Length: 120
Image 1 (cartoon, rainbow, N blue to C red):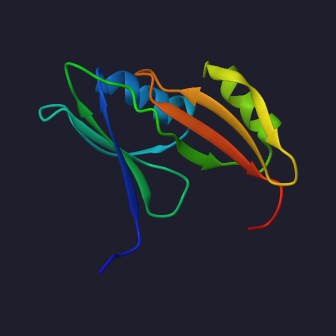
Image 2: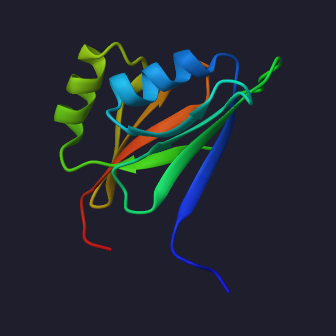
């Protein structure tokens, strides 16, 4: 029934600002942008995982997090901070399991980095 692939979809106030954040700061690739319909999509570094955007007048930030795996948390946080990404709090470590760091996109949607400390 299901085919490989996963899409996360967000309502955003400004497609251009969101695309600048996701492509310029996070380094994802633009797949689709139709200014007339107010829709766009970016390809993440995860195989067959994309993020879509619909422009909306009113946006309620998502409180669930889209999580991106990284190989080195400290390096990833440092690099993204240099790109102007704002993190909420410090890196959280759950001993012998995972490191987590939370940040937001321009619309306040919660995003997270995860570094696994054990193989799952």
